[in-house]
Image 1 (spheres, rainbow, N blue to C red):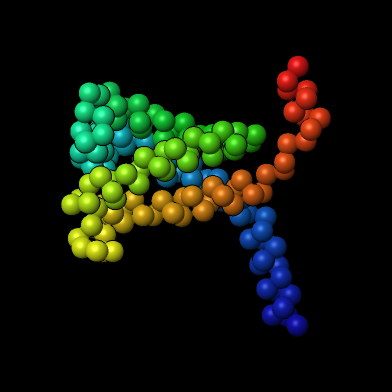
Image 2: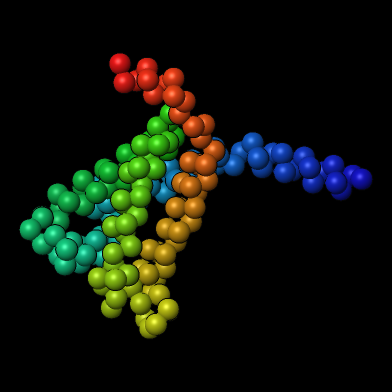
Length: 154
């Protein structure tokens, strides 16, 4: 009986901390990686520069990487702010779409061989975890009520 009680208590603790922990995890990764891009210290910068050259060659890398890093920092901050989760998730998904591009556009950098990612490829594939956390956070949100939507339209 003690084991069942302890198990239930642990599960209850995990339920209470799951969303705050998920929000903090996304904040930490996005804000930290964003800061590294802004200050020019990100190990992902060469990959981003290569991708930029293939997809948007008319943009200047230094300006792009600073803005991209600031965008990541914004996403991270929005995940921390109550009520901003929908916006954070809305910004996260286009970001994730762009971060997957090297798997397709730069296969020589992303893959050693078929289904064997390089370190850079693994860095990109780990975003599946970030998407799963964002989905879990979104699933925990209360739906907007019709009354709230009507008030916001006025």
